[in-house]
Amino acid sequence: MSLSLLDHLWDLHQNPGKETPKELLESQLSIEEGQTLQLGLLDRWLEQGEEIGGWKIGMTSGASRNAMGDGIRPFGFILQSRIKQSETRLRLDQLHRGGVENELCFGFGTSLSSGTNPEKAKLAVNGIYPAFEINQKRLPLDASSGLRVADNLSNWGIVHGLNAGTDIGIDSISVNLSRGEHHIEKTESQGHIDDHYQSISTLANTLGQHGRSIEVGQKVITGAFGKTPFAEGIFQGHFSHDVGNVKVELIK
Image (cartoon, rainbow, N blue to C red; front, side, top):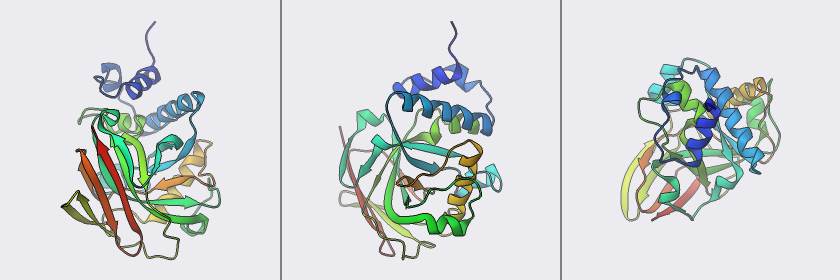
């Protein structure tokens, strides 16, 4: 019996070092088809006893934003078991290959779904956190956009620091990223990613179209503004505007 695309995708997530099946690479999925397949992947995780811990908003920066077009922002899910606190340790062999990305992470005191606007999204937020997204590269570089969406936009999980509250300016955040004593880069969010609350609003409305929502207690990351490949060591992100710091140690 031949395997479905969902079967192939599930197997790839269980064995991230495995070569991507040609059935996936030749699937020519649209963004919407990829989103539907991704939610099927999420349901498989839920059937295994996992819980949904939050969401990521994709294609919010640079060339990816321009390629997707206005108002098209695919999402990914974040498993609760893969939401980690700052200073956690992660094994490189567990992650396979990928990278660390600077992100702002938002917590919610009110659920959001269809009918959300940026003002409503802002009022629903009860916490802002410095964060790293931990990506896991399971696909080749030339994979289609639809397949990348189906693959959960490369997400493995997130690591976040302390809640900085909501009374902080987030329009022009900068992050100094270092590994050990070595400074890697300083990145700026302004002009690089979409407005955070517009992104959250778009996410909530898109989730509503799929019968899903941002639930109380969940976390949402709104787009990367800086990334670096995995390597053994301690990665630290120092966020401006009193957002705080986040740290993760990658070990062999």
